[in-house]
Figure (cartoon, rainbow, N blue to C red):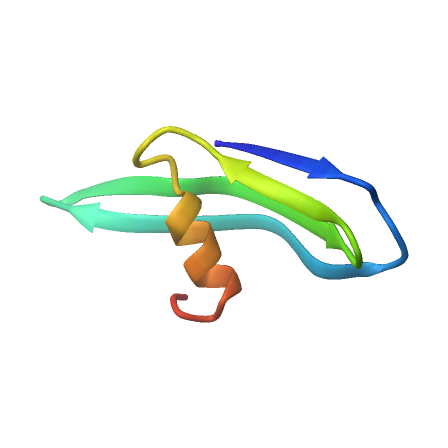
Length: 68
């Protein structure tokens, strides 16, 4: 997953560090978001890109408080 960010302005409105999300599938632990950090400053624009299954939707669900 790659996070592209432009135009840093003022203070952070999203700030998370070392966020990790895991699933257990067939008795094996799968790490979906390994120690992911993100800072989004007020007024900035960003795009979250990546291949299918890289954790983009999982990250947005966590940030939107839809998932833990």
